[in-house]
Length: 352
Ligand code: SAH
Image (cartoon, rainbow, N blue to C red):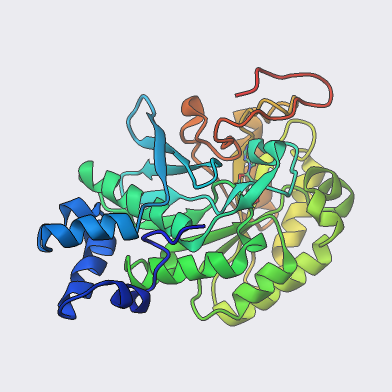
């Protein structure tokens, strides 16, 4: 795979850029402050810009950009070297702007209710492919008069199955885009060795765990990787992460009608939250529709009852604001236009 412009380190760039050493600073600033294309770096001689554009191509070819009716969610579809496609979502809130980025093309985790899981795994992304998603979103946000404040690794793929590459991208976000670790969140399906590797890394990034079930029988079914890393092992890794990072972990819980939204599920979940020090915070996500999963999401009324129940059992819970459903940009809906396997008991809709 060709080296792209957000793959190179500053040292590697210094090898490529001729002339006085401030040229390297100018290029680096073009990449990480301006977040623009080499053509726009007019403080550099024209010939140099042309050379740089050729030597350091971008990794993401834009395919489409979709904007929600309200204008506060933008979904980008990119094509990568080799033809795989991935998506990035920019979400504008009143007090912050968050970019949701992909770490793999497709996903091997096969969670049945997730559109990415339904489509299967294609390949890991490179550091440059991950970092450039942020650069593009920063640029787009700026055009809208906004500044990206948060990055979440909650797009396509399982970041902890690609931990070393993901980590190199985190370092870039922190050192070069100037994002604090507190504003970076990695979400994992629960890959225990990945969580342990992350615990050994220096920055205290936020960890979110896609739990969805609080006993192994149900979790084996909803999140198949649970058979390899069951709940007790997962919780032990989470507690070790907390012990070194001094952060709170959140559990994500997609609310599925009659499957994981019963009173008993709330009781089991609250008990698991109490096993983490400090206690885990629960993010309830109303299940978003995907073509391959016929079971419905819980009603909004039930989602709020479930939250109240968790609170009464001593667990903190919030309902995640649903963003971008109408442009298939919400949690679990990213499939990058790939056909997905239809549900076991028949189609709930047409493949995207
Ligand atoms: N693979 C990582 C990163 C993806 S984050 C992980 O699993 O954590 C995307 C989040 O959306 C995860 O919590 C995922 O479980 C959740 N999700 C998947 N499908 C969903 C759906 N249909 N509705 C709501 N949330 C969903």
